[in-house]
Length: 183
Image (cartoon, rainbow, N blue to C red):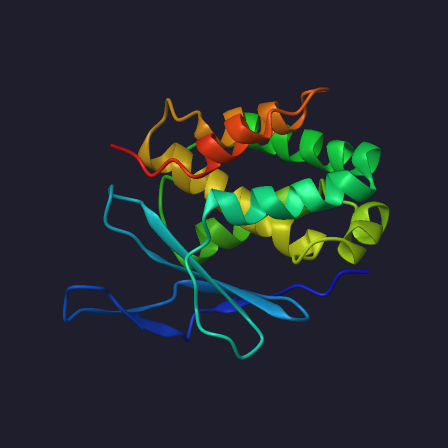
């Protein structure tokens, strides 16, 4: 059984290029990872997502990070990984923009998503790649809601999942889409 601890944020970060310090709204703690959610600045309810593995430095997740992990998982357990991707695809399609970026709104969103997630079914995927599936599930749902909050017609996250589910993977296309940094 997965052990996800959800708590009010305590982690602080300095915003690059500014003297501003932000405190996390909410934190999701896993066995070896922590996800931090801060108020973002791209839209009214934008969220800024960071994560940390163990005692390593805090990082900003990029699509390319989880894509490489999923590709590693697919290389060993394609069918189960694709089932996991289908679940994430359904979550992405269903998610709506945030109408608030406070602790309770984000907590309720993730808890609702977790009701759809069967950790025991997917836990064997933890043997492959870098990230455990419970961490990926929460992270990818947060990235989905972030994308949809900032742009209701967003498609990149969904496009990457679609590409990963193709029978004949086009690695160049997938990596290109996942590495896209915007205009």
